[in-house]
Length: 344
Ligand code: PHE
Image (cartoon, rainbow, N blue to C red; front, side, top):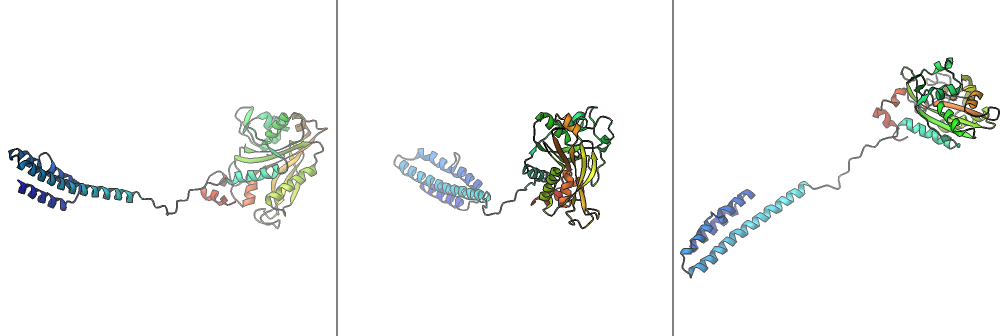
Protein backbone atom coordinates (compact mmCIF):
# COMPACT_ATOMS: atom_id res chain seq x y z
CA UNK A 1 0.00 0.00 0.00
CA UNK A 2 2.85 2.26 0.85
CA UNK A 3 4.36 1.60 -2.54
CA UNK A 4 1.05 2.36 -4.27
CA UNK A 5 0.89 5.64 -2.42
CA UNK A 6 4.47 6.53 -3.35
CA UNK A 7 3.81 5.60 -6.96
CA UNK A 8 0.65 7.70 -6.92
CA UNK A 9 2.62 10.63 -5.57
CA UNK A 10 5.30 10.29 -8.25
CA UNK A 11 2.69 10.02 -10.98
CA UNK A 12 0.78 13.04 -9.72
CA UNK A 13 3.88 15.19 -9.33
CA UNK A 14 5.09 14.22 -12.77
CA UNK A 15 1.79 15.13 -14.35
CA UNK A 16 1.60 18.36 -12.40
CA UNK A 17 5.08 19.35 -13.49
CA UNK A 18 3.98 19.62 -17.10
CA UNK A 19 0.63 21.28 -16.47
CA UNK A 20 -0.17 23.96 -19.09
CA UNK A 21 -3.24 25.78 -17.95
CA UNK A 22 -5.40 26.61 -15.00
CA UNK A 23 -8.06 24.32 -16.39
CA UNK A 24 -5.63 21.41 -16.53
CA UNK A 25 -4.57 22.14 -12.98
CA UNK A 26 -8.11 22.01 -11.71
CA UNK A 27 -8.74 18.81 -13.68
CA UNK A 28 -5.70 17.23 -12.01
CA UNK A 29 -6.90 18.32 -8.58
CA UNK A 30 -10.16 16.48 -9.17
CA UNK A 31 -8.35 13.54 -10.70
CA UNK A 32 -6.00 12.95 -7.75
CA UNK A 33 -7.73 14.46 -4.76
CA UNK A 34 -11.40 14.19 -5.75
CA UNK A 35 -13.90 11.88 -4.08
CA UNK A 36 -13.57 9.40 -6.92
CA UNK A 37 -9.78 9.75 -7.11
CA UNK A 38 -7.17 7.05 -6.35
CA UNK A 39 -6.16 8.58 -3.01
CA UNK A 40 -9.68 8.36 -1.65
CA UNK A 41 -9.89 4.85 -2.95
CA UNK A 42 -6.68 3.83 -1.19
CA UNK A 43 -7.77 5.45 2.04
CA UNK A 44 -11.07 3.63 1.84
CA UNK A 45 -9.14 0.35 1.72
CA UNK A 46 -7.40 1.18 5.00
CA UNK A 47 -10.09 -0.63 6.96
CA UNK A 48 -8.48 -3.89 5.88
CA UNK A 49 -5.17 -2.96 7.49
CA UNK A 50 -3.96 -4.08 10.85
CA UNK A 51 -4.07 -1.66 13.76
CA UNK A 52 -0.28 -1.29 13.61
CA UNK A 53 -0.14 -0.54 9.96
CA UNK A 54 -3.06 1.86 9.91
CA UNK A 55 -1.39 4.91 11.52
CA UNK A 56 1.77 4.44 9.45
CA UNK A 57 -0.11 4.19 6.17
CA UNK A 58 -2.42 6.95 7.32
CA UNK A 59 0.62 9.15 7.88
CA UNK A 60 2.04 8.30 4.46
CA UNK A 61 -1.33 8.94 2.82
CA UNK A 62 -1.56 12.33 4.50
CA UNK A 63 1.97 13.20 3.41
CA UNK A 64 1.17 12.23 -0.14
CA UNK A 65 -1.99 14.30 -0.10
CA UNK A 66 -0.13 17.24 1.38
CA UNK A 67 2.65 16.98 -1.20
CA UNK A 68 0.17 16.96 -4.07
CA UNK A 69 -1.88 19.78 -2.53
CA UNK A 70 1.22 21.86 -2.03
CA UNK A 71 2.23 21.66 -5.64
CA UNK A 72 -1.30 22.46 -6.75
CA UNK A 73 -1.49 25.49 -4.41
CA UNK A 74 1.84 26.75 -5.60
CA UNK A 75 0.87 26.47 -9.22
CA UNK A 76 -2.52 28.05 -8.53
CA UNK A 77 -0.84 30.98 -6.81
CA UNK A 78 1.53 31.39 -9.75
CA UNK A 79 -1.39 31.45 -12.17
CA UNK A 80 -3.20 34.03 -10.10
CA UNK A 81 -0.17 36.23 -9.89
CA UNK A 82 0.31 36.02 -13.62
CA UNK A 83 -3.31 36.93 -14.20
CA UNK A 84 -3.14 39.93 -11.91
CA UNK A 85 -0.01 41.12 -13.61
CA UNK A 86 -1.61 40.70 -16.98
CA UNK A 87 -4.59 42.76 -15.90
CA UNK A 88 -2.43 45.47 -14.40
CA UNK A 89 -0.40 45.66 -17.58
CA UNK A 90 -3.55 45.94 -19.67
CA UNK A 91 -4.98 48.63 -17.45
CA UNK A 92 -1.81 50.60 -17.12
CA UNK A 93 -2.15 54.33 -17.68
CA UNK A 94 0.79 56.16 -19.13
CA UNK A 95 0.73 59.40 -17.20
CA UNK A 96 3.53 60.79 -19.34
CA UNK A 97 1.39 60.79 -22.50
CA UNK A 98 0.48 64.30 -23.58
CA UNK A 99 -3.26 64.99 -23.14
CA UNK A 100 -5.70 65.56 -25.97
CA UNK A 101 -6.38 69.28 -26.20
CA UNK A 102 -10.03 70.13 -25.61
CA UNK A 103 -11.76 72.18 -28.30
CA UNK A 104 -12.04 75.75 -27.14
CA UNK A 105 -14.98 77.86 -28.18
CA UNK A 106 -14.58 81.47 -29.22
CA UNK A 107 -16.65 84.54 -28.58
CA UNK A 108 -18.69 85.29 -31.70
CA UNK A 109 -17.21 88.25 -33.59
CA UNK A 110 -20.52 90.12 -33.36
CA UNK A 111 -20.68 89.65 -29.59
CA UNK A 112 -17.11 90.83 -29.45
CA UNK A 113 -17.83 94.03 -31.36
CA UNK A 114 -20.99 94.70 -29.32
CA UNK A 115 -18.87 94.30 -26.19
CA UNK A 116 -16.23 96.66 -27.57
CA UNK A 117 -18.81 99.32 -28.46
CA UNK A 118 -20.45 98.96 -25.05
CA UNK A 119 -17.07 99.36 -23.38
CA UNK A 120 -16.35 102.55 -25.30
CA UNK A 121 -19.69 104.12 -24.41
CA UNK A 122 -19.83 102.96 -20.80
CA UNK A 123 -16.37 104.56 -20.56
CA UNK A 124 -18.10 107.82 -21.49
CA UNK A 125 -20.73 107.36 -18.79
CA UNK A 126 -23.48 105.64 -20.77
CA UNK A 127 -25.54 102.75 -19.44
CA UNK A 128 -26.82 99.85 -21.52
CA UNK A 129 -30.60 99.54 -21.98
CA UNK A 130 -32.48 96.68 -23.56
CA UNK A 131 -36.03 96.12 -24.72
CA UNK A 132 -38.32 93.61 -26.44
CA UNK A 133 -37.70 92.36 -29.97
CA UNK A 134 -41.43 91.99 -30.52
CA UNK A 135 -42.66 95.52 -30.20
CA UNK A 136 -45.77 97.65 -30.33
CA UNK A 137 -46.29 99.83 -33.35
CA UNK A 138 -46.54 102.76 -30.96
CA UNK A 139 -42.96 102.39 -29.65
CA UNK A 140 -41.39 101.34 -32.92
CA UNK A 141 -42.97 104.07 -35.06
CA UNK A 142 -45.68 106.27 -33.62
CA UNK A 143 -43.79 107.71 -30.65
CA UNK A 144 -40.81 108.27 -32.94
CA UNK A 145 -42.81 110.72 -35.01
CA UNK A 146 -43.83 108.17 -37.59
CA UNK A 147 -47.62 108.16 -37.67
CA UNK A 148 -49.45 105.29 -39.38
CA UNK A 149 -49.42 106.53 -42.97
CA UNK A 150 -46.07 108.32 -42.84
CA UNK A 151 -44.16 107.63 -46.06
CA UNK A 152 -40.89 107.18 -44.13
CA UNK A 153 -42.24 103.92 -42.77
CA UNK A 154 -41.33 102.53 -46.17
CA UNK A 155 -37.65 103.04 -45.30
CA UNK A 156 -38.05 100.13 -42.89
CA UNK A 157 -40.23 97.45 -44.43
CA UNK A 158 -41.52 95.52 -41.44
CA UNK A 159 -42.62 92.10 -40.29
CA UNK A 160 -46.05 92.65 -38.73
CA UNK A 161 -47.52 90.08 -36.37
CA UNK A 162 -50.81 91.91 -35.91
CA UNK A 163 -51.76 95.43 -36.96
CA UNK A 164 -50.35 96.80 -33.74
CA UNK A 165 -47.48 94.39 -33.09
CA UNK A 166 -44.36 93.85 -35.16
CA UNK A 167 -40.77 92.70 -35.03
CA UNK A 168 -38.92 95.89 -34.14
CA UNK A 169 -37.19 97.46 -37.14
CA UNK A 170 -34.79 99.48 -35.01
CA UNK A 171 -33.72 99.69 -31.38
CA UNK A 172 -35.10 103.25 -31.11
CA UNK A 173 -38.22 101.95 -29.29
CA UNK A 174 -35.95 101.22 -26.33
CA UNK A 175 -35.18 104.94 -26.24
CA UNK A 176 -38.88 105.77 -26.10
CA UNK A 177 -39.41 103.19 -23.35
CA UNK A 178 -36.49 104.66 -21.42
CA UNK A 179 -37.87 108.21 -21.67
CA UNK A 180 -41.22 106.93 -20.46
CA UNK A 181 -39.62 105.15 -17.53
CA UNK A 182 -37.47 108.11 -16.50
CA UNK A 183 -40.57 110.34 -16.35
CA UNK A 184 -38.88 113.58 -17.32
CA UNK A 185 -35.71 113.09 -15.29
CA UNK A 186 -32.32 113.98 -16.74
CA UNK A 187 -29.72 113.17 -17.79
CA UNK A 188 -30.52 110.20 -19.97
CA UNK A 189 -27.40 108.64 -21.43
CA UNK A 190 -28.01 105.20 -22.83
CA UNK A 191 -27.03 102.87 -25.61
CA UNK A 192 -29.40 100.15 -26.79
CA UNK A 193 -27.90 97.11 -28.48
CA UNK A 194 -30.11 94.42 -29.97
CA UNK A 195 -31.49 92.50 -32.91
CA UNK A 196 -33.72 94.26 -35.42
CA UNK A 197 -35.79 92.87 -38.28
CA UNK A 198 -36.61 94.20 -41.72
CA UNK A 199 -38.13 92.69 -44.83
CA UNK A 200 -34.97 92.84 -46.89
CA UNK A 201 -33.77 90.29 -49.38
CA UNK A 202 -30.60 88.75 -47.95
CA UNK A 203 -27.40 89.40 -49.88
CA UNK A 204 -23.78 90.24 -49.09
CA UNK A 205 -24.72 93.51 -47.38
CA UNK A 206 -28.35 92.98 -46.33
CA UNK A 207 -29.94 90.67 -43.83
CA UNK A 208 -33.57 90.45 -42.70
CA UNK A 209 -32.20 90.32 -39.17
CA UNK A 210 -29.24 92.34 -38.00
CA UNK A 211 -27.86 94.05 -34.93
CA UNK A 212 -28.15 97.69 -34.07
CA UNK A 213 -26.72 99.86 -31.38
CA UNK A 214 -28.43 103.15 -30.84
CA UNK A 215 -27.59 105.88 -28.40
CA UNK A 216 -29.65 108.59 -26.75
CA UNK A 217 -28.60 111.56 -24.66
CA UNK A 218 -31.12 113.98 -23.16
CA UNK A 219 -30.23 116.85 -20.86
CA UNK A 220 -30.25 120.60 -20.70
CA UNK A 221 -28.04 122.30 -23.31
CA UNK A 222 -27.16 119.23 -25.35
CA UNK A 223 -25.85 120.50 -28.68
CA UNK A 224 -24.94 119.18 -32.09
CA UNK A 225 -21.27 119.72 -31.22
CA UNK A 226 -21.71 117.25 -28.32
CA UNK A 227 -23.00 114.69 -30.79
CA UNK A 228 -20.07 115.29 -33.11
CA UNK A 229 -17.51 115.09 -30.30
CA UNK A 230 -19.06 111.89 -28.94
CA UNK A 231 -19.04 110.19 -32.32
CA UNK A 232 -15.47 111.30 -33.05
CA UNK A 233 -14.36 109.87 -29.71
CA UNK A 234 -16.19 106.64 -30.51
CA UNK A 235 -14.74 106.08 -33.97
CA UNK A 236 -11.22 106.91 -32.82
CA UNK A 237 -11.43 104.30 -30.09
CA UNK A 238 -12.94 101.84 -32.50
CA UNK A 239 -10.79 102.36 -35.59
CA UNK A 240 -7.75 104.26 -34.31
CA UNK A 241 -6.70 107.80 -33.44
CA UNK A 242 -6.14 108.82 -37.06
CA UNK A 243 -9.81 108.25 -37.94
CA UNK A 244 -11.81 111.31 -39.03
CA UNK A 245 -15.57 111.79 -39.39
CA UNK A 246 -17.74 113.71 -41.80
CA UNK A 247 -21.38 114.72 -41.23
CA UNK A 248 -23.75 114.94 -44.17
CA UNK A 249 -27.28 116.33 -44.00
CA UNK A 250 -29.90 113.60 -44.03
CA UNK A 251 -33.43 112.83 -42.92
CA UNK A 252 -34.90 110.76 -40.12
CA UNK A 253 -38.40 111.44 -38.82
CA UNK A 254 -37.22 111.30 -35.19
CA UNK A 255 -34.30 113.71 -35.46
CA UNK A 256 -34.04 117.30 -36.65
CA UNK A 257 -31.56 118.14 -37.98
CA UNK A 258 -30.48 114.69 -39.10
CA UNK A 259 -27.09 113.62 -40.36
CA UNK A 260 -25.40 110.68 -41.86
CA UNK A 261 -21.96 110.07 -40.47
CA UNK A 262 -19.02 108.84 -42.52
CA UNK A 263 -15.66 107.68 -41.19
CA UNK A 264 -12.44 107.92 -43.12
CA UNK A 265 -11.85 104.52 -44.70
CA UNK A 266 -9.84 102.32 -42.35
CA UNK A 267 -8.63 100.19 -45.26
CA UNK A 268 -6.89 102.93 -47.24
CA UNK A 269 -6.76 105.72 -44.67
CA UNK A 270 -8.86 107.94 -46.94
CA UNK A 271 -6.78 107.51 -50.11
CA UNK A 272 -9.59 105.70 -51.94
CA UNK A 273 -9.87 101.94 -52.42
CA UNK A 274 -12.33 99.21 -53.34
CA UNK A 275 -13.94 99.09 -49.88
CA UNK A 276 -14.80 102.81 -49.90
CA UNK A 277 -15.51 102.80 -53.65
CA UNK A 278 -12.63 105.26 -54.16
CA UNK A 279 -14.31 107.94 -52.04
CA UNK A 280 -12.11 107.60 -48.95
CA UNK A 281 -15.25 107.60 -46.76
CA UNK A 282 -17.55 104.95 -45.34
CA UNK A 283 -21.03 105.60 -44.02
CA UNK A 284 -21.49 103.97 -40.62
CA UNK A 285 -24.05 105.93 -38.64
CA UNK A 286 -27.32 107.79 -38.70
CA UNK A 287 -27.73 110.52 -36.12
CA UNK A 288 -29.29 113.85 -35.24
CA UNK A 289 -30.83 116.08 -32.62
CA UNK A 290 -33.89 114.47 -31.09
CA UNK A 291 -37.03 115.86 -32.76
CA UNK A 292 -39.06 118.13 -30.43
CA UNK A 293 -42.15 115.99 -31.03
CA UNK A 294 -40.28 112.85 -29.91
CA UNK A 295 -39.14 114.61 -26.74
CA UNK A 296 -42.67 115.75 -26.11
CA UNK A 297 -44.20 112.32 -26.63
CA UNK A 298 -41.55 110.87 -24.33
CA UNK A 299 -42.53 113.32 -21.59
CA UNK A 300 -39.73 115.88 -21.99
CA UNK A 301 -40.43 119.56 -22.56
CA UNK A 302 -38.52 120.49 -25.75
CA UNK A 303 -38.22 124.06 -24.55
CA UNK A 304 -36.20 122.92 -21.56
CA UNK A 305 -34.42 119.83 -22.83
CA UNK A 306 -32.55 118.85 -25.93
CA UNK A 307 -30.89 115.64 -26.93
CA UNK A 308 -29.09 113.74 -29.59
CA UNK A 309 -29.48 110.21 -30.89
CA UNK A 310 -27.47 107.98 -33.15
CA UNK A 311 -27.76 104.50 -34.55
CA UNK A 312 -25.42 102.08 -36.21
CA UNK A 313 -25.44 98.59 -37.67
CA UNK A 314 -23.03 96.43 -35.69
CA UNK A 315 -22.42 94.02 -38.58
CA UNK A 316 -21.29 96.88 -40.79
CA UNK A 317 -18.96 98.20 -38.09
CA UNK A 318 -17.49 94.70 -37.66
CA UNK A 319 -17.20 94.13 -41.43
CA UNK A 320 -15.24 97.34 -41.85
CA UNK A 321 -13.06 96.66 -38.84
CA UNK A 322 -12.14 93.11 -39.80
CA UNK A 323 -12.45 93.25 -43.60
CA UNK A 324 -15.40 90.83 -43.74
CA UNK A 325 -17.00 90.87 -47.17
CA UNK A 326 -20.34 89.14 -46.59
CA UNK A 327 -22.82 89.86 -43.80
CA UNK A 328 -24.14 86.28 -44.00
CA UNK A 329 -20.88 84.99 -42.49
CA UNK A 330 -22.15 86.23 -39.12
CA UNK A 331 -25.16 83.93 -39.09
CA UNK A 332 -24.10 80.70 -40.76
CA UNK A 333 -21.82 79.55 -37.94
CA UNK A 334 -19.11 78.21 -40.20
CA UNK A 335 -16.29 77.30 -37.83
CA UNK A 336 -13.67 78.21 -40.45
CA UNK A 337 -14.97 81.77 -40.23
CA UNK A 338 -15.53 81.91 -36.49
CA UNK A 339 -12.13 80.45 -35.59
CA UNK A 340 -10.40 83.39 -37.26
CA UNK A 341 -11.51 85.48 -34.31
CA UNK A 342 -9.87 83.20 -31.76
CA UNK A 343 -7.06 85.58 -30.93
CA UNK A 344 -8.73 88.94 -31.35
N1 PHE B 1 -33.02 104.14 -36.16
C1 PHE B 1 -32.32 104.64 -37.32
C2 PHE B 1 -32.28 103.56 -38.37
O1 PHE B 1 -32.44 102.43 -38.06
C3 PHE B 1 -30.93 105.05 -37.00
C4 PHE B 1 -30.92 106.32 -36.24
C5 PHE B 1 -30.99 106.30 -34.87
C6 PHE B 1 -30.87 107.54 -36.87
C7 PHE B 1 -30.98 107.45 -34.14
C8 PHE B 1 -30.84 108.71 -36.16
C9 PHE B 1 -30.90 108.67 -34.82
O2 PHE B 1 -32.11 103.87 -39.52
